[in-house]
Length: 320
Image (cartoon, rainbow, N blue to C red):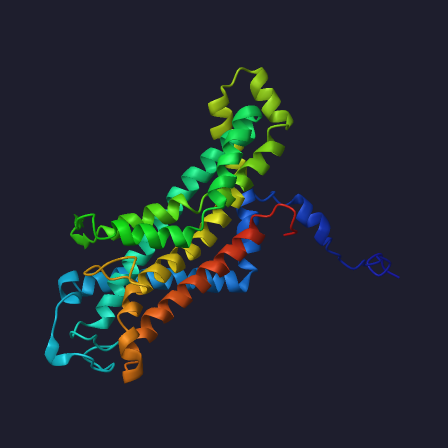
């Protein structure tokens, strides 16, 4: 027999585990993105929010605010048609354009109030958790006192007292009623407490880590330790709180505006568009309440989907 025939051919095998061990390690951001991609509802929510923002931005280019506020009593209370996609309201204004500009106001209120809540909650929780002692006791007692204030009740009272007192503002070519400022401040000042407690709890555990002790030994200032090491390592719960807080802010604004105590005309918001439909429901004017409420619901749903996905994606204890 030839030498070639005596050679024994062995089957080729592929060790998947060994190949993965040789691959470059993923960064925390890459791990989070991989987890997020596996959350189908979170992806749906992200795509939905992007589409919603694109709808509002593109619509703002196609329709001017002057057109959205223009009265045309000849075409009042018209049902949805090719001329008015969402119909018209009781004084002939195009509801499609008003939903676009109402979405701008609702999202601006949500984003700015959440930004204010994040600033307060992160600052107070970070200082209380890092310094501890008497400062911790004072800040946490203040937080607990703020938690006892019913935010919606306060929003209704302050909206009633000051909503019509602040003059109308013009900013970047837009007209805003002064009630917008009241709604932003009240929602932001009454929604930071839970975040402060979460940030404090995280920093209480992080400040005992070895790298924090090493930073102190090297003479790093407390401010730098807090802003460069502790707060960045608490970013995951802060991001999750921001997404869920956005949904709460939008629904709070819609609630008080529906009662006529939030954003005041001529500024449109999804909440006060629904308020204007109350007297028309029994007359069969269904489009006045359907489209604003539909946008509120889908925005809150998409935001909550993204928040749930981020909560799972940013959890370091979850497997890839």
